[in-house]
Length: 111
Length: 114
Image (cartoon, rainbow over all chains, first blue to last red; front, side, top):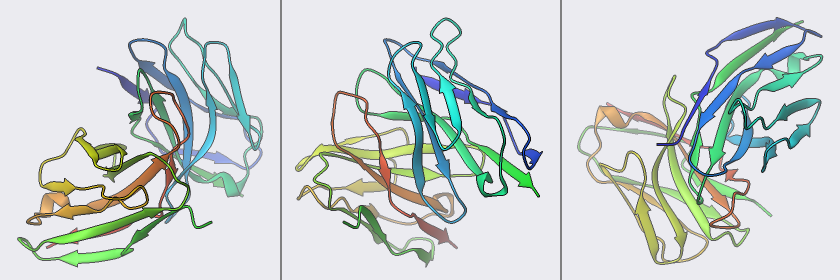
């Protein structure tokens, strides 16, 4: 069945460091891919998405490119801030409306 | 526009008790779903609905019931609570079915079963 695998956390970085959170997927058909972010005590909210191969989603300095050949959707940010501390979820929707989530990666950014 | 609302925010139950978690959305979304979030396991789909009067099971439906009598509301019922149901529960909605779209999440209900 469809699945999403993302790197385990927690990831701890200093402010202004470069961030990469890896995400790979398995899906039949042509999935849409998402990154959601969850701040402490809150629900998930969409960070960015890409709906077809080679699309790049971007928002708030975060980027991810839909790579069909490597079945990946890695999240990157050039310079993280303390306010980026949160849990990040990679997700896919394929062939319908059900969304499959990865396990989540917790990011801590130190000042 | 309140988005997706959930009540209560926190709840403590004893084993065997029943309760209903409320979820409502004011965006006229057809699709609604319930997830549970457990440490290290991401979000797992419990039940979902593609419109009023239509519901179906997700990945972990046992011990839960749902109904969808209106577009706005999608309550989740725990029939006889068990400690294994201790979790954070999120309701979500989205505007289309059959095509990928953004899910909008409520703030969650933190449930503890003793």
